[in-house]
Image 1 (spheres, rainbow, N blue to C red):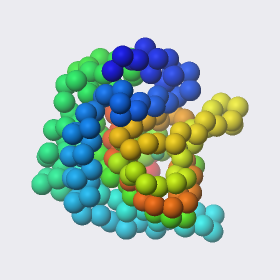
Image 2 (cartoon, rainbow, N blue to C red; image 1 turned 90 degrees about the vertical axis):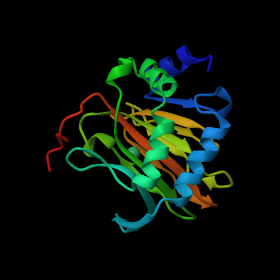
Image 3 (cartoon, rainbow, N blue to C red; image 1 turned 60 degrees about the vertical axis):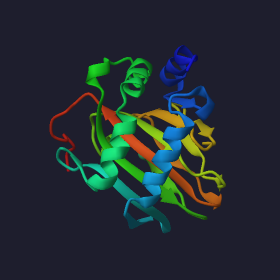
Length: 205
Ligand SMILES: [Fe+2]
């Protein structure tokens, strides 16, 4: 990966860095393995009513963050965490986020799958945990259309990212964002949240 500085600048300026598969944070073999694990992990079907519209989401969980980070579905979370916790990955992520390598903590890891006509409404990740710094989103779907990752900027303008297979989006959790409607195919992303806080989730319920 040779555009680390560029990623860092984009992240600081727009709240999001987009890294293509060929830019090599993860190898094609690692992405293939992640996709395989995500296809096998048990899924929950989640329906959220939102302003009269519905979100349909299949979620496979690897690490939950209700009070403290906790691994679940070990048979799947074990091999998956081995890949995303590799030192080369954490080291690059820490550089982009301008935090220390040893401070990088993953608190929630899950696979989100959405199909035709589905979307994820505008939200803030810090509402789930105020200590989340960044969301890392690895795209594992390939033949879908729509489903853009939309990041709102300070003037309520927005930037759309069309995530390609194997890409990684690193997005500042203080920026509101949404996933636009999927027009066709299946959009499947592996998401993990980075924090430097290892204690209890300080969300006020
Ligand atoms: Fe989010």
